[in-house]
Image 1 (cartoon, rainbow, N blue to C red):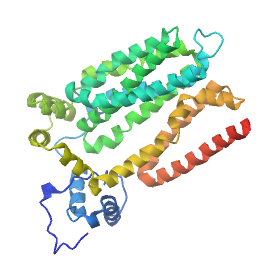
Image 2 (image 1 turned 45 degrees about the vertical axis):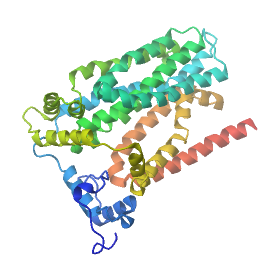
Image 3 (image 1 turned 45 degrees about the horizontal axis):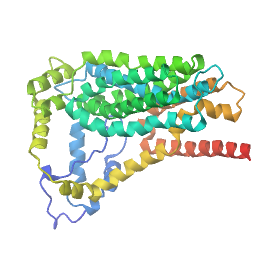
Image 4 (image 1 turned 90 degrees about the horizontal axis):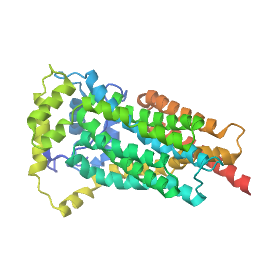
Amino acid sequence: MGDTNTQEKPPVDKIPTVSLGLDQRNAPYKRSTVVRGSRWLMRADTHPCIDVELVLGSTDEYNKPSAAAKPTVVQGLAAFAVSLYSAAVGFTSAYTGPALVSMNQTSSTVHPTVQEASWIASLMPLSALLGGIFGGLLIEAWGRKGTIMATAFPFTVSFLMIALADNVPLIQAGRALAGFCVGVTSLGLPVYMGETLQPEVRGMFGLFPTTLGNLGILAAMVAGYYFDWRGLAYLGALIPLPSFLLMFFIPETPTWYMNKGNQKAAQRALKWLRGKDADVTTELAEISKNAQAQDEESVSMMECLRDFFKWHHMWPLSISLGLMFFQQFSGINAMIFYTVKIFKDAGSTIDSNLASVIVGLVNMAATLVATFLIDRLGRKMLLYISSLLMAITAASLGSFFYYKNV
């Protein structure tokens, strides 16, 4: 950090907020190590306005279990209810794996060409991009809970369109509608959980979306072993219903209520989430303060852009986007979309549908293993290991098909 004797520190409330993702209860790291890592991440040496020790101090307080409001099982219910939609997202992603192969069987009434099949697979993520954009507007207008629940009906309709289709364009339209719902849900779900769960239970309940999403992938692959593409689509139409019904029993987020000026509803929601005997006065005041600050802030677009492109914002954002980029460009979605076809084209001696089930099981097992190891080995070590294994397996698969076709 710069010379503190010559550079004046700004007031505490002017220091940029930085999320370090620390969990003092589970991370067995020395504070000096955390400080060095935090300095590197925030580039604090070049920014005298960032006091790492002060930020870490506030993080310590943030991660302390609240004495006034202990975690309750209802927060787990709320997290589970919304996370069940991740099963629908996973099922939608994996649907084309067994379905496309089934469509090309002689008993099928629909026989898409290679190009049409590629559009059936790719329209889902393309429309999910659009859904994510509109989702940002919807969660503010309809609420987080309301927006997520609203996707249940079009989700079901999209799979019914596929199940009842007698031509390829109708199947593609169903996939596009399902993808839009995936985009909206994928945006609303983490916002809901972030605004309802206490910090001390976020790590535990935050595993629900990933676990249930992988369970949805596994369900599609297992069902594809027994059903044709129509039967698989009928099953997909039912996947969003359990989450839709459970969400009637959980509240909207207190933050959304407060943003809409409904303090009584925000208090009721917070009491439901923290327990009827919990003192939520301090937390409610903090939510109200944040909502009021947003209302009072009047910042031009140019000021927002200037602030956005500051180094201490761009550096951690670049790291996050880089990780996401390499994760997606590893080809994971293509593998899931075409799992059965990949094994079929490889000439596997194992039934291609059964092989896809094995892939789903390994995917699920890897999630559980990572959950166990992440606080023991650390995030970077798991990234190193998984990146190396992905590179080796992708190179092996690519080499196999290259020499097979030579």
